[in-house]
Image 1 (cartoon, one colour):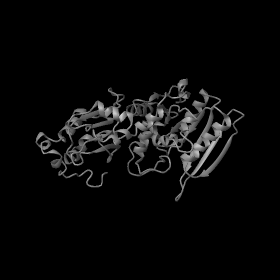
Image 2 (cartoon, one colour):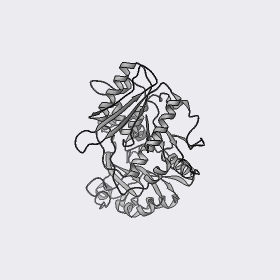
Image 3 (cartoon, rainbow, N blue to C red):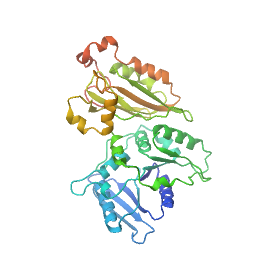
Image 4 (cartoon, one colour):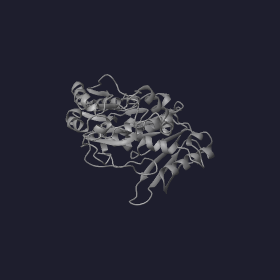
Length: 388
């Protein structure tokens, strides 16, 4: 699966993958939104294999259903085949792939027909560095069957990078490399689990890419996509700064005072490009509140409920990763409840950020009031809407 933050860098990434696997079939996709109803899904199919005819066609309908039909039809007609699936930049990669692979009653899972491969994301540095600072307009990405909620271009850009198993950062032609280095450093901090491949050719491209890019991913990759969408996730950070870009991790087992957290935001957000995590707010002590920020925009949202010992249905519905984390961090009194935030940016003052967040925690006197006292605290962040 290939995507890129510009059509040019996506095309370059596709070309490199086809060099590694010359007989692979390319299925390139674009989604043209209509004002009403379903979008038009355009597809282009090509291969050096004579048994696969080059074709270009479009259809109006559910993008995921159309692509599933294309892929299963290709598998039935051509037998075992390696497909490079090139997705457009206006998809929310992880939710889209989860929906594409999800089992259906009539046709099963796409995993019955194909093994998934690494998700490769091409990054054009100049566009990426502009996008991560843009919060003044809204975009909507395809999450599978529908266009999702409005996001800032900054949020869309970092989500794409975070979805990657492999990040290909391409240097602009004629550049001296500073922008590519900055983009690579930021991408590396945003997605430390992804394999970063930086420019190595004289034209700003890549040379001698590893053959593993066109091999099947380890078993369980599809479950990993779903787990990474959970509101409570495994923290992933680099513990060393690269080119001035660093990540600050903050944790606590006390609930946060919503008013003091709101007051702390100017200090906490100084220099932050991306923030992700989950909070335990005193105003809604039974709810998992997700923290997601990109650029200067911060979104807090009630996303789930904390797991309780007697709620067997919730434990069964949670991913194995969530259950493992809950068991690992379990407290006899507070259970799974805890705060954890990763903040990535340049010139971050880690001690000041941690001090400001620690000062927003409930004091011993406030803790002694119990949940009845906590929930009486006014909440300037969520109010009664559950998202802000």
